[in-house]
Image (tube, rainbow, N blue to C red; front, side, top):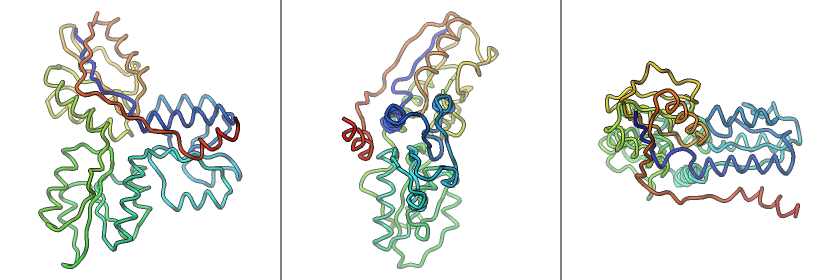
Length: 313
């Protein structure tokens, strides 16, 4: 057996920042802190912090007044920020800067009188947060069929934005439909889909053709991880999305196959290495790491956390 290990894979700059932010907050204040939703969409990461004593909540009412609350990497709506102020919470914003960019674009377009078409998945934390910036001015579409159901006055100003973790092809199909239906539609000068999402998808596209099986490390509620599994399946390869080596099944493999391993942007490297060891133990697999693109992006910790760090020096 041969393992093709995709690079880039795993943590992106936004996830690295959010996890470092939570680690540093624990170091400074102890683990009696709260996070609104999962810090990132990954079971392993969330369970690690839960074991340390961090509490993940789905409503602000669950957070005792005056507590420390982190906003997750996916961002939150103004309503959640206001509820936090009412409860006198000390908030730290771990929103990925690329998600913040989409929020700011939504605010700008809404102020300029545009109706915004948001391309994304209903119910995803990022989509909920973005739509909360201007709920009366945003319509959500998931596919070209949704576009056909839109109707606006001829003189309406329209712009589109996208969830950062979509597949390029998925978003592209909807954008083509939007431009055909509304040739005058506006868009931001730079696309919203995250660089890391694109890079990991490109790696799978390049390497899946050489593989017999595709293994994606990531959780089922991770949008970008699901896109990687779907891309593998598009190449007619058995493609599996798993949280860790404990979910691997020997029946998926035979000893002479090539297995592509990658990881979504919220999956830690430790689960990747666990899978490599499992395949090595079971099949004597050899390893080849293939780099399709270099990444050198990093984001600073949130300003409010840096201020707290300085105050404690």
